[in-house]
Length: 241
Image (cartoon, rainbow, N blue to C red):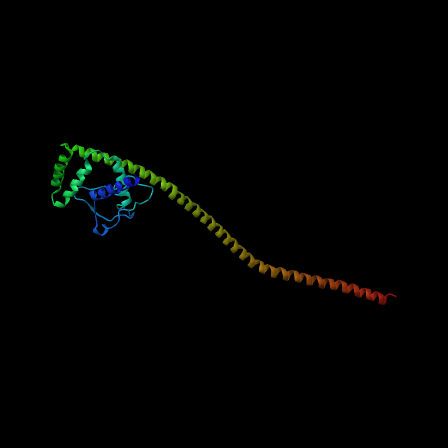
C-alpha cells in the first residue's frame, strides 16, 4: 500500500509538473526520481505558478537568498500534500488539466478559459465557476500551511547547524586573537631581552675590567705593604744584633 501511495503521489507529481511548468526539451529525459533540480523555461500561458523563491515572505537568517529552481523531490512532496487535500469529484485540478490540453490550440487566453469551463461544466454538472476558486483556495491553504511548517524546520536547522558553526567560528576567532596578542607580547619580550642582552655584554666587559683592575691594584698595594714589612724584618735582623 505504501508503494502504491508513493507511486500515486509521483504520478500526481508528474501531472502537477505538466499542469504548471513547461520543461526544456534538454531536460525531458531526466528520470522523475532523480533529485536534481529541473530546468524550467516559463509558466504555461494560461496562468502562472508562484514558487517560494519568488514570493517575498518567509525570509530566513541568511543575508541573501539564492535563486531557486523547480526540484523534482519538492514536486513529489507537494503532490503528496495536494493529494491529501484533494476534494471529491471534479474540481480545480480537472479544470486545470482541460486548460492545459487547450493551451496548444493557439486560442486567446480568455477563449481557453471559456472553452475549458464549458467542458468542465459538463463533467462536474455545475454552472457556478466559484467552485473552482473555492477548490483552488483550499489547495493554496494546504500548500501555505505546509510551507509554514517547512520554513520553521529551516529556521530550526539554521539555528542548530549554522548557529553551532557560527558559535565555533566566534570561539576560534577569539582564540586566534588571544594567541596573536600572546605572540605580540612574546615578541615584545624577545625584543626587550635582546636589548638587555646587548647592554649586558657591554656591562660584563666593563665590570670585568673594573674588577680585574681593582684586583691588580689590590695586589700591587698588598705587595707594597708586604715588601716593606719583609724589608724591615730583614734589616732588623741585620742591624739589630
